[in-house]
Structure formats: C-alpha cells, structure tokens
Length: 275
Image 1 (tube, rainbow, N blue to C red):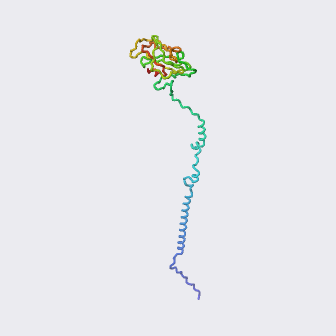
Image 2 (cartoon, one colour):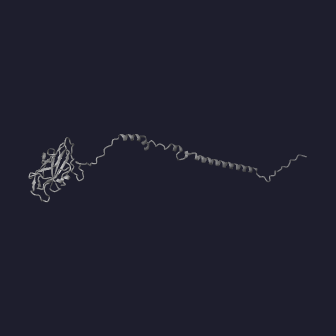
Image 3 (cartoon, one colour):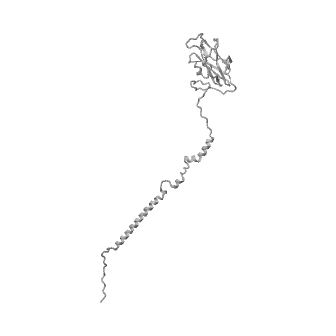
C-alpha cells in the first residue's frame, strides 16, 4: 500500500488567544509605557534639581557676592572719587586753608559813625586821616570852623569844627563866643555837657549849636551881628588856648539878643541840635 500522506491536524486553539502577536504587542506596549513613565519621572526630577542648583541663571546676587560685601563703586562715580582722593585732599585743605575775614557790614561804633541811630548824615569821619604823634588841644591853628544857620531849631546857628592837623585833638568844654556887640561870653546849656571829652582824629568834626535869640521874641537888646570869633577852652576849663577861629556869617548877618546861649561841644551834630 502506498504511503499515503497523513492528514494535517489543525491545533486546537480553543481557549487561547486567536493572535499570539496580540499578546506580544500587549506586553511590549506595557513595557514601553513603563519606560516612558520612568523617563518622564527622571526628567522632571532632574529639571527641579537643576533649577535649584543653577543660581547663576537667577537675577539675585550670588552667595559668593553676598559673602564678599558690596561691590566697589565705578571709577567715575562721586563716591569712588571721594574715597580715592577726598580723604587726603580734605585733610590737607583743612590744615592749610586760611580763613578769610568776614565782609564788613558798614556798622561802626563810637565816633566816626555816620549810621548811628538818630545821627545819620553827621559823620565826622569823612576825610579822616591817620593820627601821628601825641594828641593836642583843638584850637584855631589846627582846625577849621564853619558857622551855618539851621531851619530847626529856630534862631539857631550850628558850629562845625574840623581837625585839619596831623594829630588827634581834644575839644574841651564849650566854645567861647565873641560877638562885637556882646559884653561877655554867652553861657552854656549845662544839661548839654557830654559824658566824655570830644575827640577828633585828623579829618573828623565836632559840633556845637548856638541859640541866637528867643523864639517867642522875649529877648532884650536885640541886634544884628556880622562877625564872630570862636575861642577854645583848655583842659583846665579856665580861659582860652591857642588861636581863635573867625567863621564867616551870612551876608545879612545874624540877629541876636540877651538870650544868647551855646551848647558844649558834641561828637555828633544831632546831639548839638537837641538843645
């Protein structure tokens, strides 16, 4: 009997997956998913650590900068210039600079001041020169005397004596006035006596006022005078010293009567005209 081919058996696949490849695909897919998950976790972890470990990308100052202190200022900044040269220069300047005297305010105390309260426009210091030598008594040879009528007070004459010499001179007492028609020297107003002797440096002036007549017309023996001689007292106050002065009177003369008086010499014209 000839060999007959055996019939091909079909395996029993009941209960088994119809496609073995499906199982392989399932297994491979699961493994791939696990790998991808692991890679994702690794990447996320590395990114977080990398962000924490990369301070260089942060705008904040690095720990090393904080540890070393504040960075130095730029070379052209004011603080840098001050620190590099200010300490030495400032110290040297403070030690070598000479202070300048304050500017004068124009206020002068004592005689010679033209701005003393209540005494404006009567500065005796105009044209003053420096004094040389021992002071002397003011008298006609070292002074110039001017007699000028004034509007106020009424019937008054202002005497101005200017030191024309080279030395300081003293105006003692009061002027001894000699009018041709007078029998005696007119008396002074005692209340006008100053507390100190009037002192005139070269170029300075002293003052006295003369009441020529009574303002109410009560004076007697009234007359018009055209000349006047002024004599100067010495330190003792008795008699006159040196040469007298002959100031020019107004062309029409001055009217005088028996109420004629004079003040003591004053440092300022305003003080003289108060009487």
